[in-house]
Image (cartoon, helix red, strand yellow):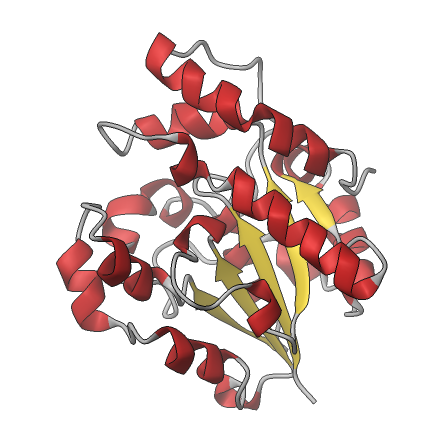
Length: 242
């Protein structure tokens, strides 16, 4: 029986490095933002490569959900699915994915805004996804009567073996030290958008150094970070610690 892990993360949250980490396991298949095409088609958000992504992906919300709950690719025992909460603008939400072990990856919104701003000319709080991320977390708490695992990117970078080991324990899978490294370059399961977004992770072979001081943002981006602060802090209370 396949263990399906749905990791809900905002953009620029170490999410691709985490996907790389799980892809290094011998028992795991990974999927990269499977609702991205549906989101772009639904919203018309003018993101880089938008039409190419729509043309490349299944953009039917219900069809994507059925696929994610169906037979795992390559009959993999573990299926890690990288999801973005802000993509979920259609008729499917987290409770429509019942056969998942949900987890949440968070990052200080100041760092997210600083990183995201390097790739886009304009962002807003919705692009960071923290409002829906918190709502999804609370929905799973209500459904299960317990909090799903939360990991903060800063804690992962500070002590990846410990934090990832505890995340694996919370998800009910064995720790695998192969998760600490990966091959340089694109991954076969990357979305076609990797050429625009994944330059840094493609140049890496493992998790980077712990973050330094918070960057200083322009007034525009600081307002975005401030709008996400309350939801981030609400989730951070539940984050796995070393």
